Image 1 (cartoon, rainbow, N blue to C red):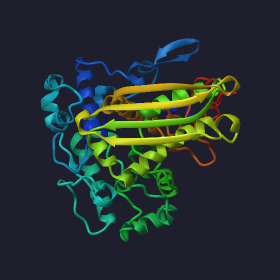
Image 2: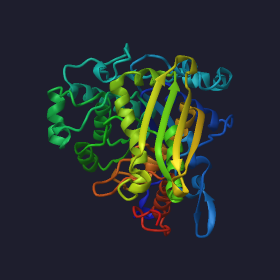
Image 3: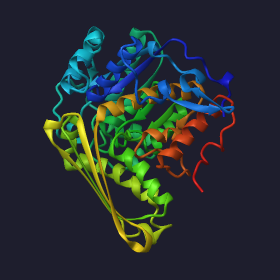
Image 4: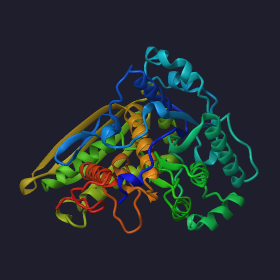
Length: 433
């Protein structure tokens, strides 16, 4: 593990590049601008409000860790619509207009660069602010130039990128994803297995920009991306922000398993009306999301180890587009469980939440922690950041962990180790007995 003298200090400006500048990105940016003026509290952010135990004492993360300060952050990104961040925030209706007014001028000054958009991967959107190129390799080069210009014009010493764009249609790993050489050949040949999000990720990695994937897309979760990350010494993380319903599953599922209570059925449905809901109304995009949402319970409950408790589990997930709700999502779960002598019980969970309010602090934490990881020499998949994701990426040979509390332990152990303090157990080995 890296010791404090191996972590470069967080000097200079940190660029935050956001592919997709809709509800999540605009809520995140507006919140940071308000927080650094003292006009709001960054609720939900571990890096700003969280603490961890070090040498027998609780210390605030932002006092213990050499993190970039909010005043050092510079925002930019891409979108397939030309709206400024202020216009996007007003349209999203997540924060009230009067909340946005104190930072309106700053938000209006942030306008997206033209996005890369092949519509077959997001069929419900019709972009008007898009790049043109003969090949996907051309698109990558245009994105790389965007990054260089952004860094130069804003005086940034380094940058991280967080994918906040839409869920793409499901794409399985293919031979084009097997190596850097095969992927680069696929870019020249416009291989259909290379999606929009992969183009952004590839450009960022080539420019030495750490990348986190906030969607279920196959953006960096394949061998070629891992190879490129190692080549350019870049950290990666993903995938799919863990916000509402799945957050509850990673709490309730471990609780039932800890008490050895059985589960026969778990029915989950969501209604939401924002752009994400519109995109997920397409069955092919929903397939990508369904896989990340369903896989959580399978791996937490482990029917193979406990067939008498979970061997007959029926798990169904639905997402319904309902425009009147906007960003105010409702996640409803019905759990049919059983206890002593097989007697049936039920649990109902109704989580009325706001997608972007829950995602915004995740974006902030990932940006600051990935920057810390890169300054500390961490390369490749950072599975200690699994706390933030529905479907955590891991290094080869490591199993995924979905239990929220084990994930929290992994995160804090890694941070202690980076700073030269002893963790509770070696990073990567955290688990319950």
